[in-house]
Length: 366
Image (cartoon, rainbow, N blue to C red; front, side):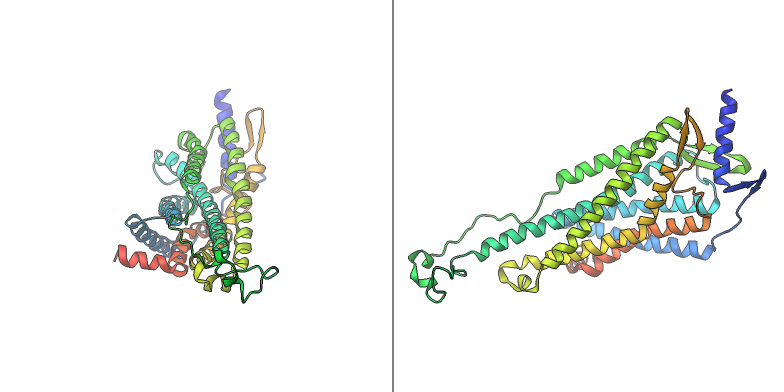
């Protein structure tokens, strides 16, 4: 009986991997991606990893604030995504798991860990920039209330305000250290713990399953834990982070619209110019994430809600993002390639948008 159930499960998985089966005849897709596209794509990813490696070296050697610490962590995660991309693209192009069985749990766990860390660190970065904006906006308003530079016109004439009262002739210099940064220790600790918690089941439960026609599947085969895991990923890897990322994008756009040129030109608000650059950087990086990775999250969401479990037996087995019964294999491969271009794009955006970053690389690396 147990053997029959195993054969039924294997047959179900085989049916999904080989796309369609009509009137008892298996139809296997023979579409192949051009090799030059794959080679050019991996070259692009390696260049992006080298850029992120240079960023990492520069950030390790400099004194880091909260912003630079977050950029460092994002760069490290983007470097690690190269391993996941190579495994995933090779698996998609060969239509089977082509690596050693021992690498399957490492790949599945790293895929979840890298993708969770990427989106949550972007959310943390956006919230950090918003907090910096609020902090320096408050400090700027306090400085503008100095009695030597402001006066209540309803009570005193503006031309006599500075000399009419004795207290206005006194200048108080505050030598106390002002808070100019926001701590990211606890948010980043929470992000790493949450991401590791979501990825540990994939590290421990993933395994390979040999199918017909020499096809091998790398997935979480266990029915009960697979169901719990997929619904956990649905909530904490897709729905919650996407909503938070979209909300932070709206907040960044609003804060940028509130940052006028008069604020930047004010000598008391010199720091505001750097924060405005960070606002622009956060908006561009967030938009680039939606352009490259939103499609992956949507396909993953469709797969999970289409799962069907009945009396601990799988009626419809799908393992996103590698195996997709809604799209043909070349399209899935190209969408996966689009997703992993995000790391290279983020590295290039750091060089293009952040002038301070280019200075750090020149002084700390070259």
